[in-house]
Length: 331
Image 1: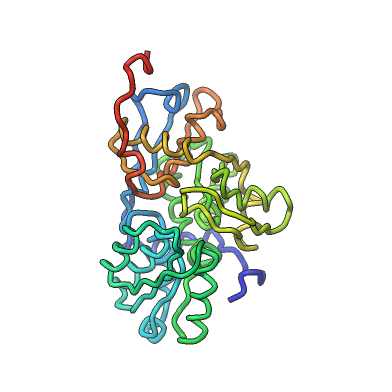
Image 2: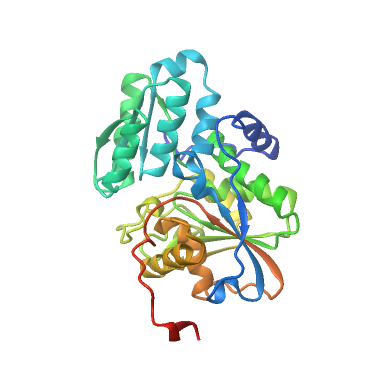
């Protein structure tokens, strides 16, 4: 299970096959126009929000996990599933395992919010807390798979998982065929890998913009270096965007197809989550608000009149602690 081994990325045909395979397992999530709204994130552009926060299990991760599990033969399902997660991928795998009748074990790092462990157990998964960050938990999950014969499901370096996430790109272009730019949060890189493969294959002129936390610039550093970089430390509350290291398959796709990677602070993501809550009643976790943070701060400045999609990738309550600011703030 060495993710450094060269793995062939999925093709557009693989992504289309994934979309067909998981059609009965996941929801087609809505796309809404972010207007009228206050603040510059809605000024001078047609801003659309792809609400993957409304996906089954609470995030896009159900797509990739469902594609991986649906492709398994019955004997592999019977042996069970194992994975490591910052929370959302584990929920996707737990859901897919519940749907397929496969026993599921999820290793979580200590920085995972306790509510996610509770949600995993509600889907019937066994939860094991291991290590300080995802990379620690992942090493133990891989050893578990080798020892038990369970199917190990990688959150971002598996072609079937990437193809499942790529189904989002197909939906986005189906709704917005003239899309100019799509903004996607980056953790390990599975989501943006799948979305970029789908969108660039069908509409090469669409810009794919990645967003990472300042405290976990895993792919930003790797792309700049031209090789995989292992971060010495992680310093962000957005734990679903915080692996210390990505994988070669993701770095290869991202280096080739992603136009730019921007970095945002935790407080900028928190303010963006509040914006989503107060303007639309959308409950988003920090990672899901990262694309909006890039817009609110002006780190991403689209041309006037362009059509932009911000992918709201996961549900949460990081914006729900908002209290109304002085009215003068909007004058």
